[in-house]
Amino acid sequence: MQEGGAAPVESKGEQRTGPGSSGEQRIGLLNGFAAYGMWGLVPLFWPFLEPAGAGEILAHRMVWSLGFVLIALVVTRRWAWALPLLRRPRKLGLIAVAAAVITVNWGVYIWAVNSGHVVEASLGYFINPLVTIAMGVLLLKERLRPAQWAAVGTGFAAVLVLAFGYGQPPWISLCLAFSFATYGLVKKKLNLGGLESLAAETAIQFLPALGYLLWLSARGDSTFGAEGAGHAALLAATGIVTALPLVCFGAAAIRVPLSTLGLLQYLAPVLQFLLGILYFHEEMPPERWAGFALVWAALSLLTWDALRTARRSRTVLRNAEIAAASATAEAARTPGAAATEAELGRQ
Image 1: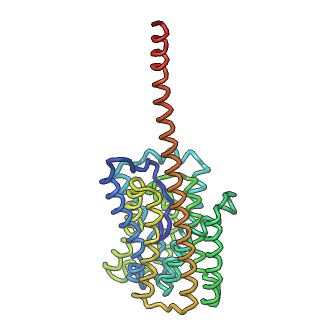
Image 2: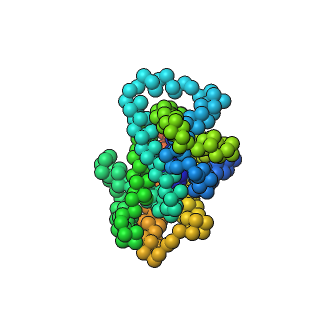
Image 3: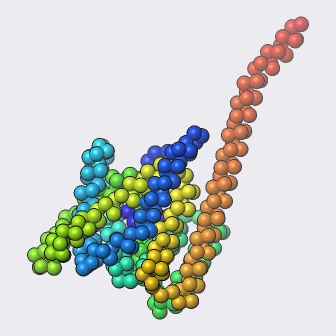
């Protein structure tokens, strides 16, 4: 659903992380690397779609994504969610919100890549976890640990430094980060699987997108068909580019721990950042390096805190299980001891 960064975990199954699941976890890791790797390398794809503009590419992405997802749902026979969803207006409203914010996210990202702002786009997905935490505090009244407060403060300082470096706030990064954080918040409330959610969202996007493409064609401004069969095939491939990483992500989400996914999520913006510098040759003056360094410091602090908290939680859970097992064993032993004492008394 995204071009990188933190993806909301949408699995409805349990994490298969118990004993004997090493094969499953290996498959999950491979799918996780594949998903975030594809999201990280997707900036290489959008320039191939020129001379189509960002609006036309976005509309094709919506139309062809729905077609690809419908085929996937037919193959997997996953239709049971559709009718119950249609009877729940509140969920339909949330899907409409999700479709709107992901439309903004996709459109800004495509425009950014094809306009030479790959590095700034990667920054959006670097700061996305920090924005998500900040929204949790402001909207959900969540309480932060000291390390999380420090990370958010460092991230805010990074934005100020980057604003100085760019001569203005990094609007592309902020738009991508806030739109995807909002999308993640809505998806959390929806609790739909990846394919199901994408199908519902692209179903809402489909008619406006198709209408826009027909309007472009009527004006003679459409590049679909006008630039040859190869160009048309690439535009149609936007559906695969959108849905295939999501399928891999869904396979990873049910097989590996959330802490592992949390670390894998940084693979995509790292790849995008490297592409921006090494392949697209975008400039990185010292003040931008300083801003990115602050962002990376904030993310390192956030990751360290998350891993430490997860380790403590596992220790508490393990101790509770040991205490429960000991209590059960004591309870099982006590009646036998009482019977022995009674027998000795009769003697």
